Structure formats: C-alpha cells, structure tokens
Length: 122
Image (cartoon, rainbow, N blue to C red; front, side, top):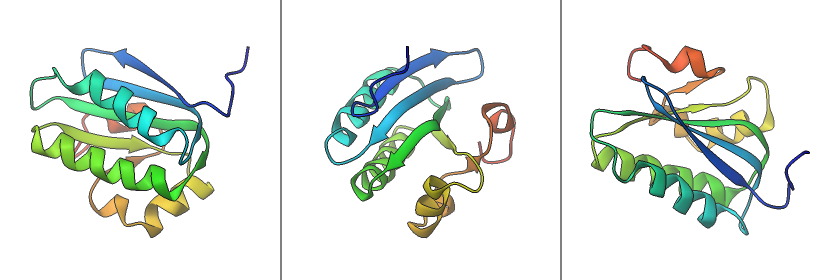
C-alpha cells in the first residue's frame, strides 16, 4: 500500500555505516515539524562522528518550510558532531529547490544512498 502523501513518514534504518532516515510523502508546512522531530528523535543518542543520511528520494513535494527545517537539522547535527548528507534524485524540482536555497554548500547531496558511504565530507 502506498503511504498517504498528505502525511510524511520517517523510517529510520540503522546500518553499520550510518543512520538512514527515509522520508516518504509531502514535506510541507503541515508536516515539516513532525518530520524534523522524528529525525531528531532518531539521532539524539548517536555518538559523533556518526553519519546521518536523509533519504529524500520518495519525497514528491518539498516546501520552503521543509527547506528551513532541513537547514536547522543540518545545524543541529553539526553542533552535535554528526556528519549529515542528503539523498535527492538528480534533475528533480526537489534538488533544484535545495540548490537555490544553498543547502548543497552546507550539506553534501548525493543521488543514491550508496554514494554517500565513504565520500569525502560525508
């Protein structure tokens, strides 16, 4: 069954290399705070220098509120000593929005989860 796109769902996946936060659904003004809270709850007990990967491949809509919260999440992870990267499908509106917001200058963005493992800066 496909998830309700009106509600964003965060699924934490723990691997030996990283914590992967897979987000499915629309991340907008109504859902962005819940997504942020679920992501932070998953990383709060992680020791540095752990890698946190936010997988946005199944996100169809990313609002300005979501971008602001991703920036705040990046700052919070950095303050905790965690390395953060994002996974976004190349050529999508989501990637364009993140690039226009300058997020790529603060957080490495990759096209696939496997690309984030062992990459410089990730």
